[in-house]
Image 1 (cartoon, one colour):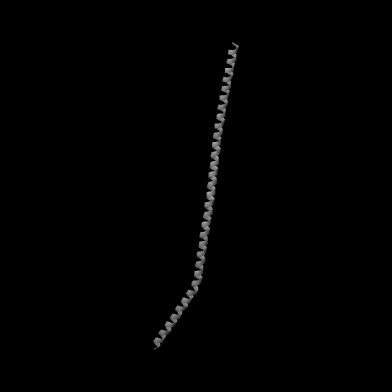
Image 2 (tube, helix red, strand yellow):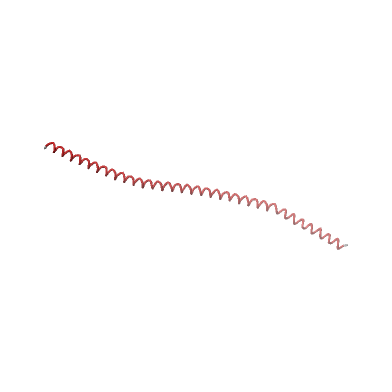
Length: 119
């Protein structure tokens, strides 16, 4: 009977030890769960900050690209303006030459008319 009692006592001790280990594990569980929750929250915050930073980078890049496009358009307009200026200058020179030719022809006709009238 003593063997049965010893076995019973060992079972009680084993159950008490198991209960103690369980309680110890339970006591460790909550701080671990809190730490895990804090790490997850920090990870979500970093993800949010990263997405926010990526968004700001995209906006800055778009602004830079738009400024580059404006600069290229302005440079083209200046070049086109120079080309048009040259075209206008050339046309004005041609017009001036044409008026001089007309004036010379007019003077010649007038001279011929006078000569014809004098004869």
